[in-house]
Length: 96
Image (cartoon, rainbow, N blue to C red; front, side, top):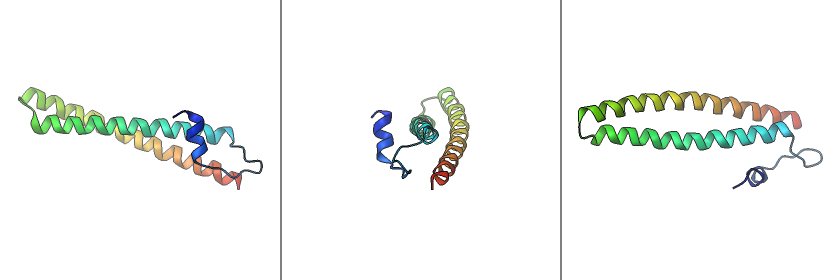
């Protein structure tokens, strides 16, 4: 799915039906962040499964370390997602 198709799914109601550049940029960033969230969720799930079904203590310890790293990255990512969502709401509010 290209950027244009993503933008077409969420209509804006500006005076001339054009979407301001800042809203398009924020939507694209939000889409990329959500893709990264899905990726990190998968890595986190994989680390948990490696802990649960690890064959030796070294691989379990590595999985625990990976889980911590993925959780920290996911926390930072979620903070960024919330910030972009807030900016997007503010930008849309300026249109109305």
